[in-house]
Image (cartoon, rainbow, N blue to C red; front, side, top):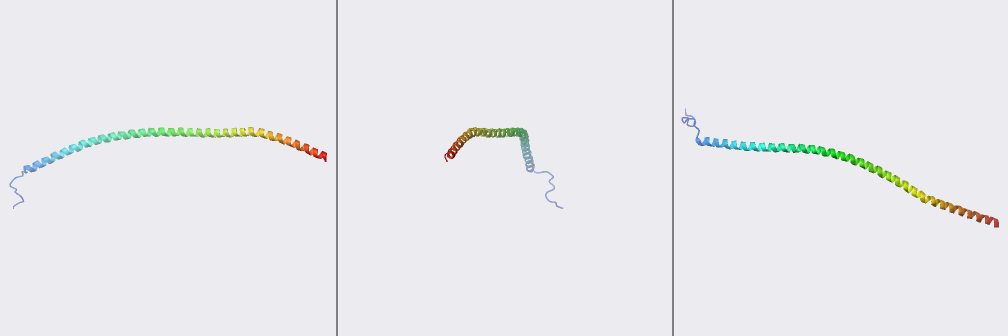
Length: 133
């Protein structure tokens, strides 16, 4: 029976095919070497970035603590300001009240004296009118 192809020739591959396979292996090896070196470089960059992220997270935590501390101090100062303002307004009200009392006291005394003098004058007139009638 006759088989496909020439089986009498032996099992030798053509040299061009061997050369092409060797060239493919060389190209694939070179590409693997380049990809491997790039991968190592990228892994180094990833580790550097992860370190930076960790440091940034630690710094952020410290900043958050300081922020909370400052907010607490700010709230205390606001409360102190409110107390001072309320004390100031209370003192101003007292000062205004005392000032008004100082102004009104002499005024009332003057009015009372004038009233007494006017009342005496009226009594004298009434006595005169009663005496003359």
